[in-house]
Amino acid sequence: MVVGNFSENAAEFDNFQIWDVSTFDDFLAGNAVIREIASKEFKVVSTKREELLKKPVISSIALIQDVLDLINDKHFLVFEKDDDVHTELKVMQHTKVMDFGIDISDIDESHVYIMIMDRARKKAY
Image 1 (cartoon, rainbow, N blue to C red):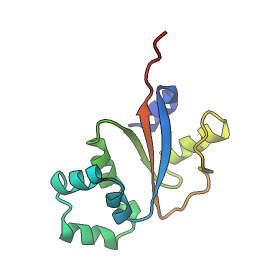
Image 2 (cartoon, rainbow, N blue to C red):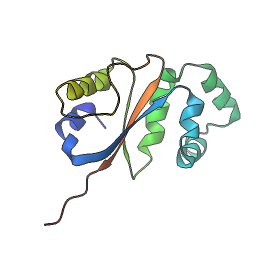
Image 3 (cartoon, rainbow, N blue to C red):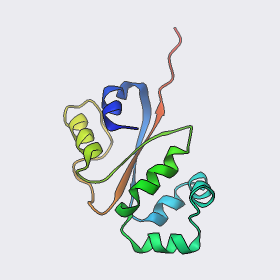
Image 4 (cartoon, rainbow, N blue to C red):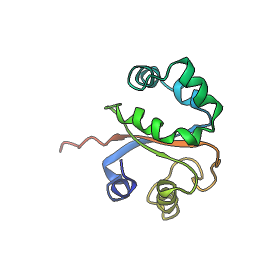
């Protein structure tokens, strides 16, 4: 998802969570579906996994986003400190459009963060 689309359409989503990912292993350990997709679709097997673990997790943002894009029942924004997504989320928190449960301005520059959300269900009247 493009952050501009999110900021314009934030009301269409709910059940927000922010996942702090400090290593690629943290990402893989987050969910069995993630491990399965990484293994089957992106061939993240032991050799490639070991290579990824030696690098800072921020070097794997594109792969993380590609894996998450294959999960259909959730929506994700992957970001790192001071990128476009993070900048937009800071504005949204500062203007009180959203409360993320953490101070979004104070995040670790060596980590990857994933905003997890659901598409809001339409209320029947």
